[in-house]
Image 1: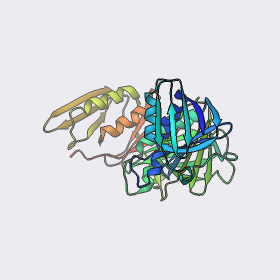
Image 2 (image 1 turned 180 degrees about the horizontal axis):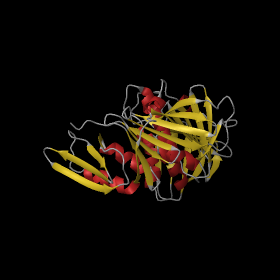
Image 3 (image 1 turned 60 degrees about the horizontal axis):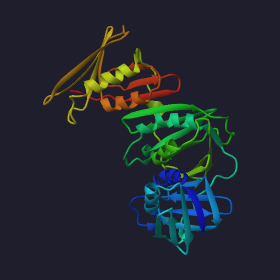
Image 4 (image 1 turned 30 degrees about the horizontal axis):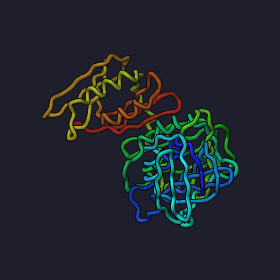
Length: 368
């Protein structure tokens, strides 16, 4: 095998590929990438057996076809540190040489036949959505997934198709985010009621895809896998097994205490009122009365903070405690200048809405 690469194009591909390669694994071959050169193209693969990436590398010249499996971290380091615009890769019998204008590296690889298969994207997509639209939805849902949970369903994002809409729902048991995005076209009838839980790692990869916001993402459902193609990149992923919580049951629908609030001003108030809280007293109180809202935080060993904000509110006064980080997380992903806050009693969750397509449910905390 002999191929000449644009170093920048290969570096871009490796940036995405290495995010899949596991740092620890009992199977050393999974710490490698597979480089496969055919007569007209070069594809590079990575997988951890749950998530796989298949990338068609641009700006290459294939002089001899072939196939090699080499350690991902070594290849990425060589490409990153090189100053050449073009790098040559030659492979024979598991040994790979990478040459620049004034450098040469020899890497020992593994047998290409032993590398796990990584799917490509074949046939028509079941679902299509604009890349920018999907990534905006990921930003408004992924943050609410559980980072570690024995309930595996909480470690992913629920995809639920409803007509020409795709609902993305994530929860860690203490908060829930639901975002609704427009599909490029209505899916076929057999796909129209599909539900699946996509791992958080896969969602994070989708968020890293480069390209124009108008690029179309094609999605195929195959048994317990989802295959996603966009441009030169194909991401394949095993779906999360388990039952996602019946999230509709916890979204309040009967609240009468409602406010419209400025996003940036509330974000600033939450940050400032949380400055003196500690891990032991990790909470701020929202006190809402006639035409005023007070954000306050305190810890016996450090002191207390108080931030006031004028609001248009005439209903019954209410006090409620929240984890400030959970408020900061959601306010960062709201793009509108204003959002709606709806509250019930102090032991019931708060509800945040932004437009018709985003809502966030946040469980209160007892401040004592």
